[in-house]
Every structure is written in C-alpha cells, then in structure tokens.
Image (cartoon, rainbow, N blue to C red; front, top):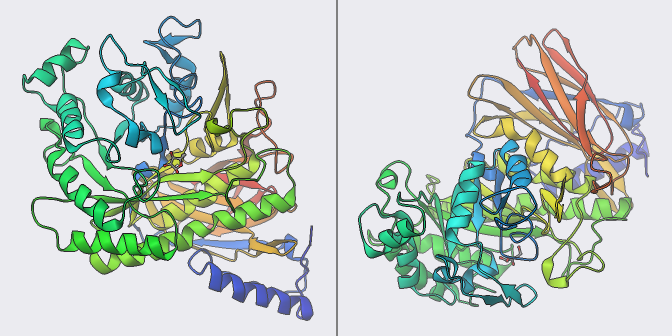
Length: 544
Ligand code: AHR
C-alpha cells in the first residue's frame, strides 16, 4: 500500500497532480479538492455536506432491476427446480430464493435474455407439452422449456416484481412477438386469451417493459443501425399491450436496443436511433434506450473472481468507474434529440464479468462474488443515482448463479453474496429523491492506479427521512466522516456497514457470513453527524 502523506512540499504537488488528472478523467463524480495540511492523509476527517433543501430527480426504483437469462444455472436450479423437487418450492419455484429476493424488493426482472432472447420462441414453453430445444449461445445444452411464460410470471408475482420481457427480433417475427403480447395481455376472449386461460391464467398479465431485441449489433443479429431502426419501427407498432390497466398511466415501456460501449460505432448507433425518434411519426415510438456495459477490463474475461489481491482490486474498480463517462457520453447525445429527457437510458446489463470458475462449464459464466463486487455495485448504483434524471432503469447481470449474482445455489443450498447485501442496504433509496452532496473524496493509490478514496450519495425518501450512502474504496485505511446537513438538526441517526477481512473475501455455503452487514456507530453533534468507515466498506446511514 502507498500511504500518501500530504504536506505543503512535494507530496502535496503529487496530490495536486493526481487531483487534476482525476478531475479530467471523472469530472462529475466527486469534488477532489484535497487538503494539504501536513497531517497523514489517511487520518483526515472528511467533510461531507448535504444540500437538504435542493431535492433532485427521483431515483427510480427500477435502477435496482435484475436480469435472469436462460444461461447456465441462472434459471434452472437457481429459480426453477420443478414441483416434484425435494427442494422446498411453490409450483416449481424455489422458496428460499423467492424470500431472499422479496427482501431486496426487486422492482423488475428482465427475461428470457440476453442473447438467448433472440432465439426464444415462446410457444415452445407454454402448455402441458413443452418442446425440448437447445441453448446454442450458452454451452449448447438442452433447453427443456419447462420454465416458460407462465412460470416466469408466477415467479415475479411471488416476489412482487414487474415483468421486463425481451422479444425475439433476431430470429423471430413481428407476428410471433405480437401474438405473445396478445396472449399475455388481452382481456377479450380471443383464441389466444382462451389458451392462456386454459394454461391457468384467465386474467391478463401486466407487462411493464418490452425489450425490442437484445444487442442487435452483435449476438442479436449483427444489424446495422439502419436495419435495426426499421425493425424497431415495425415491432413498436405491432407488438401491442392490450391490458386495459396499461392503456394510460401504467403503460408498457418500449425499450430499444442501444449502445454497448463508448466507441464510435455505438455513438453512431445512439445518434441514429435518437435522431429518428426526434422526428418520429405517430405510428411508432419508444420510451427507453438500452445500454450494456460490463466491467471486464479486457476480452476474453480473465480476472479471477476469488483469490486475487489489491492489484486486481484496484484495476477492476478503476475500470468500473468508466460507467460514468459512458453514461455522460450517451446522455449528451440523447440530450441533443430529447432535451426534455422523455426517453430513459436503461442500463439493462451491467456488472463484473470475470473468468469462469475453474472446473465450471465455460458457457455457464459461473463466478464467485467478493467484497470487491460489493464496492463495485455501490459505485455503479451511485453513478446511476447521480444520473437519475436520465437513467431510470438498470438490470444487474445476472440475478442467480451467473456473473455478478445476488444469490448462489447448489442443490438445496443457497448463499447470499456481498452484492446481495448492497442491494438490500440500498432499498431505502428506491424512489427517494436525490440530494446533492459535496465532499473531499481524497485519493487511494495502489501501484499506478489512483482512485477517489470515497464516494457518496444522499437522498430523501417519501417519508422525509434522509439517507446517505458512503463507500470507502481504500482497502487499508479507515476514514472518519463528518456530515453537515445544511441547517437540519438531526434527532437520531443509525447506520449499517458491509465490510470483510479481505478484498477477495466471499460468502460460501460453508461460511455464508464472511461478508455481511453490521451496525455502525453514528454520533450526532448539533447539526453534524459523524461516523467512521472501515476500510473497503459500503455504509448506509439514516437520519431523522
Ligand atoms: O449476460 C450475458 C450476455 O452478455 C447476454 O446474453 C448478452 O446480452 C451480453 O452480451
């Protein structure tokens, strides 16, 4: 570890240099005005100031969305065990998983893919006779189609989430997708509605989001923006939601395929779709533009998900902060064509993508989830919150047993990951109003990587309670935070923190609580709230 001692001499110049560079690299993230006082930097008290009078955009609960693709053990084993399983289940769906997901108030789940969605044919997965097919994208394994439309909608109903369905644009037809939506949503006695009733659901389903294709510039059909736009117009016109409850305020939101990075081909993609939307005619529309961005550093994914040190910790966290500039870049294009921000940016695939666990099927994308992932999740959620006016949805990839999961399962066993705990801690931020917060982030340096040492957001919930999240990125030093609340006199405050012995600490079936939350002591001194953050920790404080 390099402990930066800030003085008014050369070390202070180094800090100023780092400050300037970081300010250039990640300008909106934090105020990096380092204070060179002569004391050891790691012992500085960080002043955090919350502007409680300046309510910002609502932090849409849907930024805490999940993604469940037919991939590896994400659906089969992770969610679906079948009604005859010895594992406790309700109509084939694991009870342990349902209750864990209810506790994090999952707002929506994107399904059935991913790349899988562009090869999915819904009719093969309804009714008593399922068609057994293959899953060519993910290991070429058998797809039994025992988890289909009704099972997915039963599952989300059990956990209280909304449905985000991605329809097949790559190898399907507009007719197939239109019939799926008629099957799902019409209250009228059409042949498809009668079939839905015969399959156990007479009432129309509510579908909150409709994804029109997935990564259509790549696994979704390698389309040009021009070609995709022509498909978008057709699908958005003909794939209708007939549910009477969704004709007015609770309309189904149509999400167009958007960028997968910051390179020119993706800025052109965003330009093309947004420009067309600005001039769109009545006969087609969209409500959101998707964006995918994984933290991977390089392809193929090579970083280990467990058994790594501080070098890999800092490299991954540096890479994850690219999310901010990517959102800025695409938001700026969107602003040109949609200054009123009618179109949401939906980051519907994000998270860490590491090398598959040794011994696992390489097509199953199985990885462990460590304290590093908890920090990574918090940093990304904070970025989304800071862009709440445009980013109104996000889906971490993926919910169970795949990539940066909330939950890992092994037969009847289940373990909650560090990322799960972060999502649980952030529940109070769902639909809360963003509050501006200013602070001296300081810096954490390891080798040639320098990162802002702390990150923070603040929000006010609908009951008027104030919430703060503060992440201490530094894995070696604790930090004291003194928060001033802009005139508000706090009566009580409490908090919890998530930390672990090491940056690569994980929860396992045998040791499920290595990375878990504990209370944090918070002091109120007049208008100031003070607390100490442990190294590499995610903390949430509430103030009343
Ligand atoms: O999440 C895994 C895959 O990553 C998805 O199927 C695809 O959309 C993306 O490339």
